[in-house]
Image (cartoon, rainbow, N blue to C red; front, top):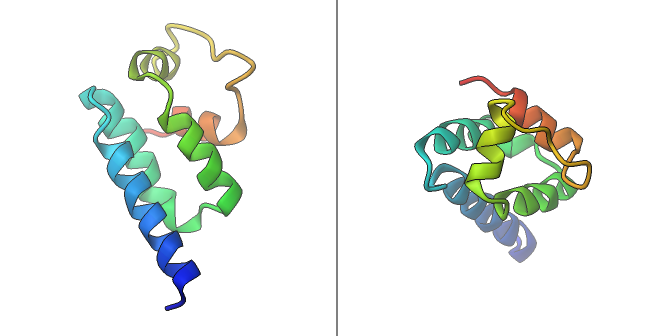
Length: 88
């Protein structure tokens, strides 16, 4: 393995851990399940987007996932939409 691939592997493992340890069990299941399922296929740009998504508050993500609130345009994107459509 090269240092770059080591770094990529560490980044993916860190993102998976953060996605599965959100704080709200429902988001652990939805977000974590989505990331676990697709992590190996995410591009570097999608990993960047995933890091931005992880920084969002659980309450907002859960409201969007349960369609209790619309996704604001500044957060709307293909990866977020795919995560919100994910069903464990």
